[in-house]
Length: 106
Length: 167
Image (cartoon, rainbow over all chains, first blue to last red; front, side):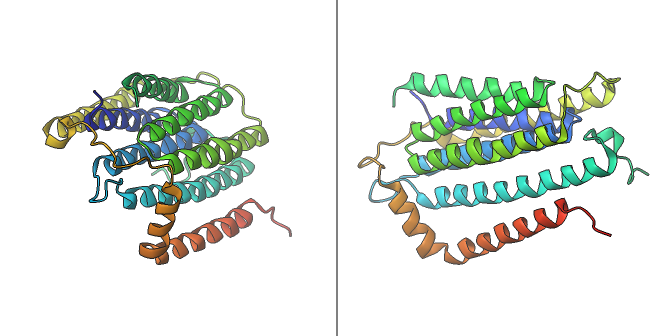
């Protein structure tokens, strides 16, 4: 029997994978992909809660699904701007490696 | 929905999600991310969220990942050469991620609703586009228009950022 907890645990593991990617990888593009993994983990738990909270008519709670829709839209905008910044940075420095970008390092 | 679908798609999503951060080749990472998102879309459909699953495939696996692959192609990135790894920083990062996962599991363990099965639906949710559309335009009309402005600003910002300086 699949409970709400199964979905929450899977979502937590996916978020941790994305978090570890941001912490451990040194390539800007991979870091952006790991950010996408974290956003999607949040989406999975939102949809699981939407399915769990049945309203009076026996339908899922659609507010959470509208929220997921907004998250996907913002993620698309974020990826577009983030990749444009990576391209601008690559033109300036010929690298996407975060350890080569030390202009703000004290 | 039979339980083994959940296990198959959850395993697919997690294995290929881990492959994203393990692969050294950025193209392999991007393609693993597509497969991971397809597993996630299947999980959404297991949760009777057909509209969300569909836009997951269309927007994420379709549009966003094609954008990633285009940028990898444009920057001509190859497999990154092995650099000297800062082991202390890596161990610290892994420890923080692990501590975070332990915290999430502890919270879920304490959460009583997590042990309940998903309640049955009164009828199939194959019309959820209609329901989500009604909710979106009745209750979330202003956020919907604000999100349109966000997309517009992002589009203008991308053009400004990627334009070459003409002097």
